[in-house]
Amino acid sequence: MKKLCDMQTDELKAFEQQAQREYDDFKSLNLKLDMSRGKPSPDQLDLSMPLINVLNGEELVTENGADCRNYGILDGIPEAKKMFADLLGVAPQNIIVYGNSSLAAMYDTISRAVTHGILGNKPWSKYDKVKFLCPVPGYDRHFAICEYFGIEMINIPMNDEGPDMDLIEKLIAEDDSIKGIWCVPQYSNPTGISYSDEVVRRFAALRPKAADFRIFWDNAYCIHHLVDEPKNILNIFDECNKNGTEDMVFEFASTSKITFSGAGVAVMAASENNVNSIKKQLGISTIGFDKINQLRHVKYFKNADGIREHMKKHKNIIAPKFEVVINELEKNIRPLGIAQWHNAQGGYFISFNAMNGCAKKIVSLCSQAGVVLTNAGATYPYGNDPDDSNIRIAPTYPCVEELTKAMELFCICVKLASVQKLLNSK
Image (cartoon, rainbow, N blue to C red; front, side):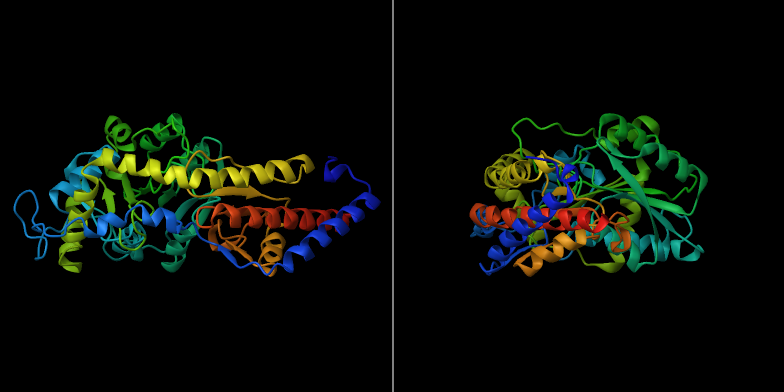
């Protein structure tokens, strides 16, 4: 197949006519499929159904005798702290077990920094300007938190090893109004890139000008593997301990895509200094999180290895869906030379880069034909992709048959938008 950029005008017009016919045929099918978010499929949710009744008839007490139905234990029941500490590679005293959402924990952490500061430093609200570094493309909900609090966001390009560390090191050394950076270190959202050992070491060795600079290490996909022998990233806290920078990191994770979205358990890992400070603030804002749900998860999984085994069942369901996406792109788009994408080994997304100026058109065409994708631009701060190129593909929710149809349509829309772009430029 000839590359699109090598075609003459008459060839491009013929290609456009064919793509338009195929698109019109798909519109007549009246598809209705929402792929706008990375949601577990019903089959994945069914995997955890036994968790609901795991406490049936059992006493709701912790290993140290505390009644999970009552007040107390702000930072999580001890067996939950141990299970998640083992999962993240830290000590139990470095864990706070939250409610059902790591997003809520991240929001609260930013909110506390804005109103009361971090470890005795001035509240961020007292500064004329607060800035955050944002690796792009990235997670739209991270950006939404910053925008909500009026925090200025600075784009940091991603490469195959992670964010541009040269740029990060330069910026934070010069500007004490830069207070943090968002990171999804394992299978980044949406690129699927995992940070290299060198990148993790450089993060741990950062020397920011701002004493209250924090790395928001959103390790949402740390065990969401799509291959049998995954490469795990370095433990950020192990590296920080070598540099005396352990106060610099807030790590987050949850079971939202492991058990039930909205009914899972979220955790935060941090230094003892940070944990002790946060616990004082939690004592003002809450009487404690859902200890019964924490106990339910511990009884169901038993330990961190139990969670890892459970995730192999998820892999068996979603890995074939990622293969559908990649196979359709390789077959229909690769020979035309009009796009690039990452073949992720884990996580929930595939990052697709169309020709510049085509992403919004592709997403719109798909929507008009019944397949809703994440808004173009959502993977950049303020919803502004300067190249109008990146599209986040979320393949997990549909069944394989639906996904195959959706990707056939997606490829047609990519062809149509691309050829029209080339024709308009002639």
